[in-house]
Length: 191
Image (cartoon, rainbow, N blue to C red):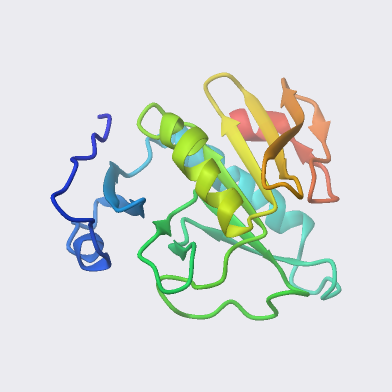
């Protein structure tokens, strides 16, 4: 199912997002409400295994200045006072910058790193609208993981606000992709 946004007579609001049924993921991007079905098993499995790899390499007792908070599908307000709401597949905040993740929905703290798992229903939006909004919001790093093609792309936001493709990984090697310092076995993501 490809989500097709309708052009509303007026921009969608957070109330429209809250009215969505539980079985969809809703995002408000540039005044348009996007409703996407929950991920297919391959997509969900990839992000579950990626979170596991990140958590295994970053236990809770690591030093504050090097640790990360990692969340699956957090609802993030990209700009204060707006209804620009993104739901990346995975997001992370440096513990040194955000010692405690607020227990609010949506989160009003933009992540330092986000990961989008490419799927047929989201890949175009992930690479266009969301990349543009993430750069404007100040996200430093974006990964796009494509489980069908077994690719991981690492993007870093430059000082000018553009995305620079830093690395592309494929296959089954063990990698150390930025901004993290610990190894991630790619084969684990694709299985």
